[in-house]
Amino acid sequence: MLSRLLFNLINNLHVVEKLAESRPIRRAAQITAYAITKAQIAGRDASERAMRSHTLRQVREEASKVPGDLGEMSGRLRRVRETFVNEVKEGWKEGSRRMKK
Image (cartoon, rainbow, N blue to C red; front, side, top):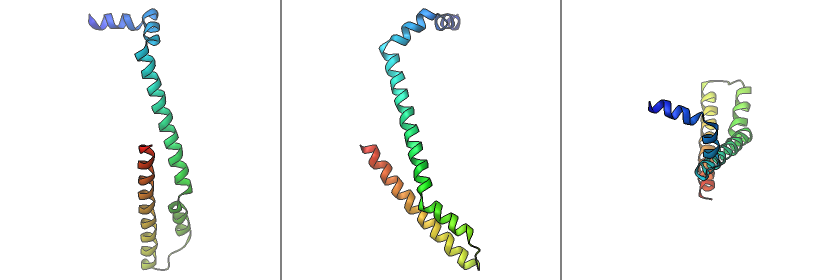
């Protein structure tokens, strides 16, 4: 019975219009739009940083070279790992600085 009443209210055009015009619903829509926009901007920034990433360039360069022996390959992987870790740390610091603003 309660579900039927709710279903009738939700499908009533006049009730939906009144709710859409109410301040709490408008504010919720504004907050949602703001959160989505911020997430899109953050995603775009992250993808741009990844494309400019020194690690990405280093991986491409290292992948194009043929390793002479296992020791050489190990050294290359260690350098890539160190670069990756450093960039993650820098990104984390930058992200926390942006969150404080």
